[in-house]
Length: 227
Image (tube, rainbow, N blue to C red; front, top):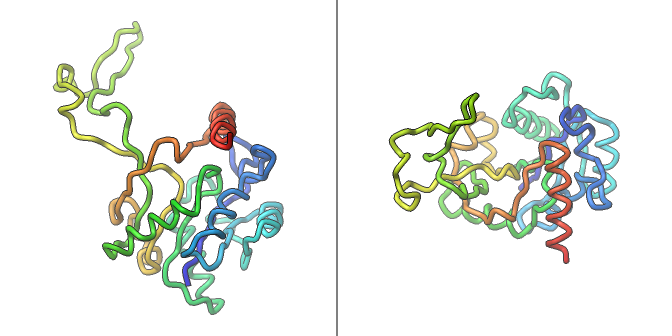
C-alpha cells in the first residue's frame, strides 16, 4: 500500500488557520486531498493533525484520521521527517501494510495528481529513497546581491560580478509541495533532500504561501489558470 500523509497542525502563525482557510471558495486542505485521491499510486490519504476542526474538515473531503498527532511534534520547530515517521509508525502499529509514503503539504492548491504520479515514476525508475519537485532559479544565485545601509549594492560572490549568467551553473529550489519516499527512508529519518532526487517542474506549477500577500497572489494565479 502507498499512503499519502498530509501534515496539518492547527497552530499556523503567519496566516492563522491557513490549512483550512477558504481559498477560492474551498478549504485550502481540500486541494491536496483531492489531488492525492485522484493519484494512480496512492491508496489511502491520511491527515496527521493535532486539531479537531482540521480533522473534521479533512474527513469531509475524503481523508482519514486514524490518530491524532501528539503535541510534542505539533509545534512550529519540528521538522517534516519526524512527523511522517511518526505517522507511518502509528499506521504500521494499526496493521497497515505500507510500502511507500508521500508527504504532501496542506497549502498546495496547484497540486495535481498527474504531478504526484510523475514524481513517483521517477523515484521508482531509479529506486531512489526520495523524490520531489524542484524549480529552476530564474536568475543565477551566484550573482545575488545584498544592499548596504547607504543603498549601495554588493555581490555576495564578488568573483562572479562580471561573469555572464549563461556561464554559471543552473541552481534549483524545492517547490515545497510534496515528497515521495520509501518506507524505510522515512522510518530511518533520512534526509529527504540530499538522500533523494529532484525532478524539475515549471515555476507556475507551484506557489509558496507564507503571508497574506502570497495568499492573494496564489488566488489570482489559480483563477487565471482556471480561466
